[in-house]
Image: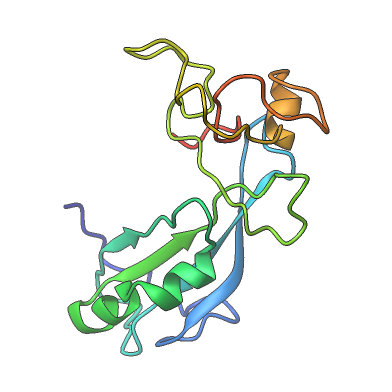
Length: 162
């Protein structure tokens, strides 16, 4: 565990201790990331002291979820309040053009997009698996064409999440 001595600064505007703060973002330098930013929710304990060291825990949601929903349903913020850590809930890349509400958030966990050959080749699913849409990041990567479904088993986008 690497500890910091705290940043010695107040929390950024809008971050409320003891509450899940949504709408945060960080710039992403990836040529296949269509928007160049990644959103996240943040929980800082109500008793936060900017001069005290606190661990940081990243809590990644599942495939059909988002940062705010994950923060409200898994109880990590309750543990953060009681055990003393900051919780960050990153959003998966919501680049499915067929999902305007950004609920189809996904992660490219090192080959789940079918572009990297693993022990069993590039196949990441069985033959009867439902096809996935061509994510915008995969259009940018040249893996598939906009408005089509994937011809392979790739189930995630093509931005680098590893």
